[in-house]
Amino acid sequence: MPSAYAIFIREGEIVDPEAMAAYKAGNAGVPVPGLTPRVVYGAMETVEGEAADGMVILEFPSMQEARDWYYGEYNERAKLRQKAAPYRGFLVEGL
Image (cartoon, rainbow, N blue to C red):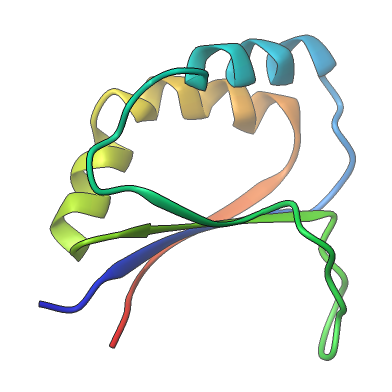
């Protein structure tokens, strides 16, 4: 079964620092079985297109597990992140 990735790209500055702080606090210590962070705002080099302001890539054992996570309890916390800054998000099946 191929792994899957949740990719979140921040495309602008944080406009609501309080919402971002609440988002980070809400995620702290929440265990997610099978989730492996691969990139969390690491150094980036833009080689094509517009530069991103930040990026997070999370690996899951399967696309279904990525969906279950995103559309489950995390979905409510994601609303805080979306309020805090402009993001684009993707769930992508790996090889």
